Length: 509
Ligand SMILES: [Ca+2]
Image 1 (cartoon, rainbow, N blue to C red):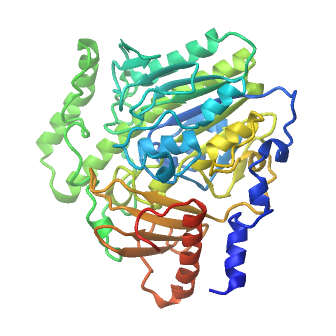
Image 2: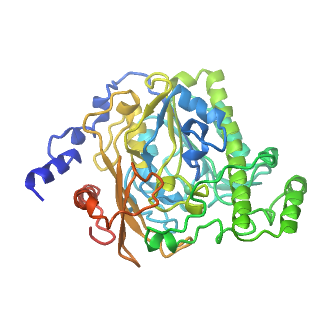
């Protein structure tokens, strides 16, 4: 590679001394925040496994999310928001620390989060913010950096959840999405003092096994959902990683996923409603004795409807919080974030679950509303990551972003003033293998047009997708000589990103 080109790459990645990217670690200066100004409140709503193609503001063909759309209509929608490691606990650790998995230590769901390390809630707390964490935590160790916390142990349950409130376990009766919202509203209403607040309000839904609330058990009964074009993908033109996964609707789903078995922890009243909803449908299914593609089609319908029923509860409950912000007058001074810890396959490629660097699970929905700085109905196509959230919250709070945080504040983008040197590619690394769902370890780079992936353990295979010609990633063009030059450039940039983020794990590029 020519020296000139290398230098240009490094400059773009913020390596060269004095570059704008280096200066951007001082967002309190760069974004015009001055001491003495009223600092905004922050409500960071996150769901679990909510794909953006199941939100009407992102053009969903299968459901409506009127309350989530309210955030988009009054704020900014991000079209290219990506996670750095598409799985629950790692994503959360990346958000808390603003650092990649290999640095914060939670490379997969099996690792425990070291709560003694620096996190954005701790920095906000130190700067005089009141901090709270309510809902799904999933990091194995107790939350740190919060004045108040009340979390679901582990994955939590959809019905009648146990919760751990400041270390004390308590049991609740009802539907978890409603109960978590009750707790969030209670905390907001009972808050005292003049401090600004940061509330992390994180739902369990719509995570597997997609158990709908009592109110929505029969929603969508009278409709047939459109199927994705690649529901019956045979993975031709791709490598072993896609062929050898274990996350297909056809082969991987179990009776609890498909509601052929009821959840075990329902009260008699809940069980009655559940059986009234699923009993007749399951009887009809058994009578039909479906086989082959017809059986896959039935499973898809059962899965997607339950998934969307869970989202209906999320949407309704997000509406309750937005209503409260309006009624209380807090809305004008509060930054509202909505995202999910990563995307999800909604039958795309015949799959559910996440993990792969392919589009459906790499993407995170991201909506941000803040009337004082964000233009209603605005849209950004910039490449942003969960790595950036912590820096963004600190920037809004006027807290200097420490040098060791690897993300960049999104505040300028939200203000409609994207920095000229904003990133043009992102780096991804997934580690949980061998493990459930059998998705092999891989890292890669995504630009606006291309995605280069290296599955480096168990197999040594590269994949390249031309997202302009092949947005659904059905054809790996890594072996196509027409892309040789692009591959060479992407590999250089990939290596530069690995160096920038100090990742020497996995095999070398
Ligand atoms: Ca998740």
